[in-house]
Length: 357
Ligand SMILES: *Cc1c(COP(=O)(O)O)cnc(C)c1O
Ligand code: SF4
Image 1 (cartoon, rainbow, N blue to C red):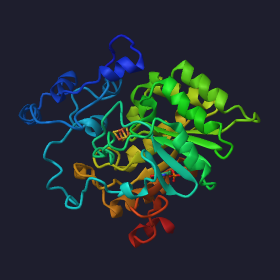
Image 2: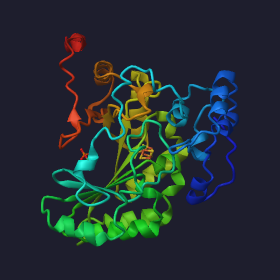
Image 3: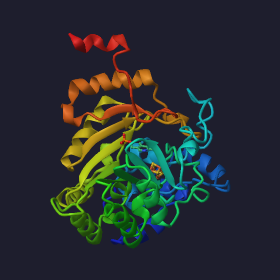
Image 4: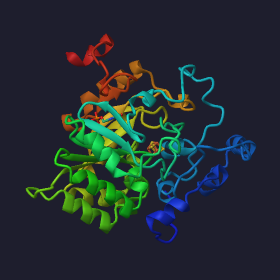
């Protein structure tokens, strides 16, 4: 681990200072593998629509000199490696065909009781497995009018939960974020607000005092406008939660926020029982409950992370044998036309029944 961080900067500066040049990242990590370096030298001039982007605080959690580091693997573009990988033929731009579920720009209403808002397309980090990497956020920007969303909710009485996603909703500044939170929290129909965000993991300083005070006031139990506030952080590997990150995550609990995690099952990152057990335990140490473990969406450019459903099930049986019930994430995948996250059938693979005695 690198111990000497640059002087403390606020989270917005940290985002603008993110590393975007692969050569600079490899240099910082003292990775000198000439084969690897030549790949990035060769690609230095190619266009980068979803290029490398990683803030220094996240880089500081990577191991110096380790080209196989599980955090590095999540962000370093693997030029050309997605082409001939297993399962690599049907990787598409919009694996979930979400374009059909968007009644209002920037809103997805696929699941009965809840809507998902993409309030921004910006992220503090670019994750190579991300299924939104080809999403045209500029063309699908949410209306800056909260009113349009409120009208839609009023017209659909089944909706009681609003999910802020993205992009990363915490890349909005507090002022803009609070406008959205207040607009949703004041609707009698809405009892739960959920934020899906990776920022507390990537730049823990994003959980600043102003934000935590706001969360605290929104969750005051037994007051008129109190709502359930949920944060789902996206952590794939235990090393993403160092002590400073864990302390920040605990502050959310003190502010009345329920904190959960979703991970994506990624080859070379977290596809071993050791990695999954360490992740669940580390999350719990930080006050976070495992929620989902997703199979990879087959998005173009991410095939080198592919773990087959059969391998995933075998891994899950090992996790069952090792983890307390509350430390087990639900193993799911997303099917394009399914109105919920689909649980993986773990019983159909009979060879796993060695554990059934
Ligand atoms: C994942 C998702 C949700 C939330 O699903 P949960 O199972 O409640 O976590 C809601 N809407 C959309 C479009 C989603 O993709
Ligand atoms: S932070 Fe989330 S939305 Fe943004 S690139 Fe990473 S996985 Fe995708």
